[in-house]
Amino acid sequence: MMKGTGSNLLPALTPVASAVASSGAGTLSVPPGYPDHDAQRIADRQNQTARAGYAERQSPAALLPRIVIVGAGFGGLTCARALRHARAALTIIDQRNFNLFQPLLYQVATAALSPADISMPIRRILQRQRNARVILGHVEAIDPLTRRIFLSGSDQKVAYDYLVIATGARHAYFGHEEWEPFAPGLKDIEDATEIRRRVLEAFERAEVEAGADERRRLLSFIIIGAGPTGVEMAGAIAELAKSELAMPYRSIHGQRARIVLIEAGQQILPTFPPSLAAKATRSLEGLGVEVRTGAKVEGCDAGGIIAAGQCIEARTLIWAAGVQASAAARWLGIDADHAGRIHVGPDLSLPGDRDIFVIGDTATVPWRDGKNVPGIAPAAKQEGAYVAGLLLRRLSGKRAFPAFRYRHQGDLATIGRKSAVVSFGRLRLSGWFAWLLWGAVHIFFLIGFRNRALVALNWLWAYWTHEHGAGLITGGTHPHARHARGSTAPGGDS
Image (cartoon, rainbow, N blue to C red):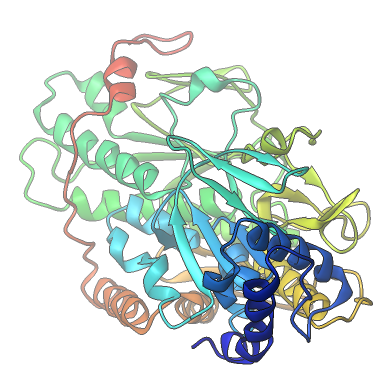
């Protein structure tokens, strides 16, 4: 029986069922212990069931407040786990059956880790949480009036009393969606394995390429966007290229790859202090990465890019420049900002509907100095924990709850296997010690002992042997890649 839930409800339900059996349909009382906020909803469900003649078979769980969390990323999963002792029926909906540790996704894309190292099935994570169930599905629409969630591809509708939307974001191309086939972003495992395939396949194609110009293009890699993801990707590709070109290739052995990091702003890592950004630039340049700031991308296709009026040729492009929120605003039929994010109130609820909460990359949450809460994992986890605490208070009959307050815990970015930059308020670190701290933080936040152990062992092996993972090219040629190869560079030769 569910801890603190079903066992306490059975004494209350017994007289309810007896009353219905003896008198037929009628007005039922709410089990003791529920706050006024939930009482009317529970009473309505009891009365509907009684009129249908099924009250004697109604389970205790059917009378509990229904909390539905859409999205099992950092925010959604934190919220779900914090509600493990709630007197509520908890449902988690996600279009994938696993939780993904996105900060290390770039290491899958560069053959340092496998997808299984940074992911875990949602059901396994919540297997001991008796008040939770998991539904694999894709949300098509949400009706706040009837409090129903509609899933695509089925007639299934999920009812809720409280709804938490934590559906994350995808990469955005600032109105140039036609660039996506040529410069894939990095937000899920499919993106990572596709980028890995393109990178490793570039070396294989260069090995058999007779033309020097085309071989140069194949050994050129452009990363667009110099936030933490772009910086980490550039450093990882630089080290991967160095190790790959030291392998027993015949034609390209000993040659150098060209890695170019493009940033529209005036410094890389724009959220970091300028001193740390400068150190990160020097570390990247030490790995052979060309860093170009103040270079806005104006064109992009299979042959390369045009940035700041200059054509840079490369066959492998990677996009790390922007994000777009999920379709949650469309599901709800409400307005959103330019990035698709939903404006929320001080308690992270929708204005006008205090039973729907939006957290993580899907929400616009004011912070300080006119800025919004950044779309990073620690922020999503804080928001998830906050909403869980608010719901627990409301379920216990307590109304007052302070507004959400984000506490920025710092910024971290790694450059290759021996260097990183870390900013924790006044504490600023760089170099090898910062890299150790970066690794410890990421291992700590991984879910599951097995994943922590595997990632730590992989990193130790790579550090001491200077070897990457297996470097397997898996999956067929992506349709977008096939299309891209038939195109020409913007303003340049194919």
